[in-house]
Amino acid sequence: MLGIELTPEHDPHRIVDLGVRAEAAGYDVVYSTCHYNNRDPWAVLSQLATATEDVRLGPGVANPYETHPVTLASKVATLDELSEGRAVYGLGPGDPSTLTNLGLTDERGLRSVLEAFKTAQALWAGDRIDHDGSFDASNAGLNYEPPQGADIPVHVGGEGPHMCRMAAKHADGLLYNGSHPKDLAWAREQADDGLDDRPDHRGSFDLLAYAAVSVSEDAAAAREAARPPVAFITAGAAPPVLERHGIDAAAAEAIGEHVSAGEFSAAFERVTPTMIEAFCMTGTPETVRERASAVAEHVDGLVVGSPLGPDLEASVDLAAEAFDGLF
Image (cartoon, rainbow, N blue to C red):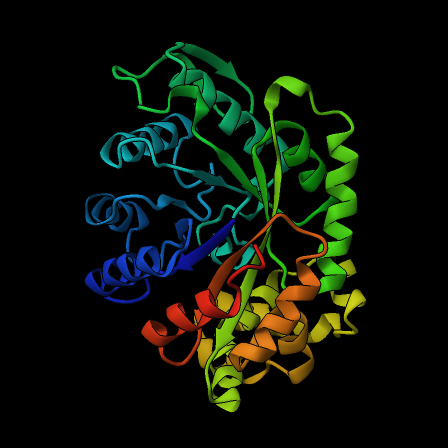
């Protein structure tokens, strides 16, 4: 499976055009990122649902803190109906840097993610639910049934060992935010542990590398375009991940402080070559294909994540060509 992440930091019309372009280039799934400081991803996904025909669509990823899980379930069901059965539910604990601005950092956790998508699956199947846990609900239900029903795929976004194992046991896929073979080899070990406890009736499971990719015929330009997403990834990386790549934890913390304060230029300037190497596939099509080939040994698919490259339109096509046949 080859997916692509489109970040609605740009004009929504341009994002829709990029999604149409991605479908034509052969991507299987288009995810729209969910950050309060960008445009609304659900509006973009709705437009994509009517502008495309075959590609799957979904948030990449929503979190169950900003929006009540029952409301999230209805949003995904609406997208499934509008796209005639093409929705994917990307759900995770959220980006700590941006959730800090909303006073929600302490809400992040495995239990809330699991309860949110289990609730969604029950609602999509036509059940009414009562819930007293990480959120409250009383006799909540949907007044309509999405085309896919309870079979809408759930892709959990996560990086910690417990989240990886939980996704492998309960969900349809794990969106692991990583682009380096070392990280994906580790993620595969965690997922395999979870698969040992996965009931047969849940069907197949996919480990997907949600990889930052910056591709261009100009390698230097591609590396420069990688700074923004690498800053966000570095700021949110767990200590073991930083240690795995020899990145100073204090340097990562400083980047996170700038991000939370909205001082993005200062955050991007602190990104080092080591951080870019660890957290982004960047360079010419030949270079990123080489990195992706190493990652492909550990995963079932790849999502081409932001920034894509210095020229978004060209990068959509270049990445599709670079990864053709690998996933």
